[in-house]
Image 1 (cartoon, rainbow, N blue to C red):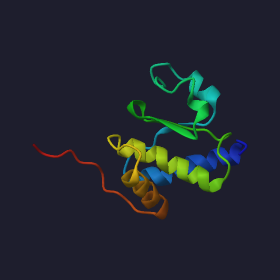
Image 2: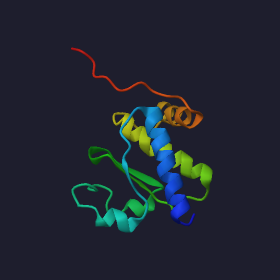
Image 3: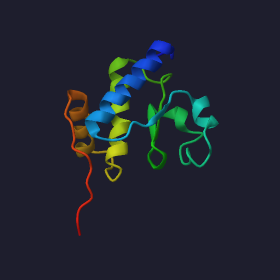
Length: 121
């Protein structure tokens, strides 16, 4: 896909919609490797120089996601990637697997999740 103003706006809109469904604060979205490298190193630690290899990366501690538009082949993969990275933000304790993928599918289908509440001891 080629990043133009319309695509950038579409990604930001979908990020807002999916963030609302997950009841999380909307993250800052980076869309080019250059934008990742321009961020302070402490914010993108871990996947700074290798981010370009992935469809997306979630930097959970800083409420930041990277969507690699150049690598994503089509609109469906784009939606999947946005939802995937936001599920990482909402459920940081979950590893990739059946439950994780089920949550991504639920977000894409429109399910809304209540705000996260810490358990009482």
